[in-house]
Image (cartoon, rainbow, N blue to C red):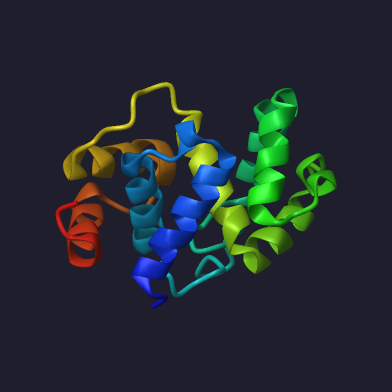
Length: 164
């Protein structure tokens, strides 16, 4: 497993570079916890033959959705995402899932950005409790049909992040 304090620092740095509104402590904790629950910071490819990549198990289709339906209409934010991830903005204008599979697998910051954008696009307020974060993750990130459950999220959160 990667050092959690180093991941926390990287997530914080990337979120701040996206803009202060993306960098609340609750948001940083949620992104860090998502990586713990999704991959234990051990895997950059989905187990089996699934499409998800990065520690945050972002699917390339999710990247394309973020790009085509959100960032495309917010060019200033798109540039900030490019800067935060050190990925040329031309790639942020590219809707090719194969390209994004490669970027997610090779660039930790790109996974952070897409995880954070996915949560940002949720029309419900981000919770500030561990239990609320677990349910939020399950419903909006893992999805109701996904294999994860809120209890696992809570256990992982407390094990690696304490009761923050």
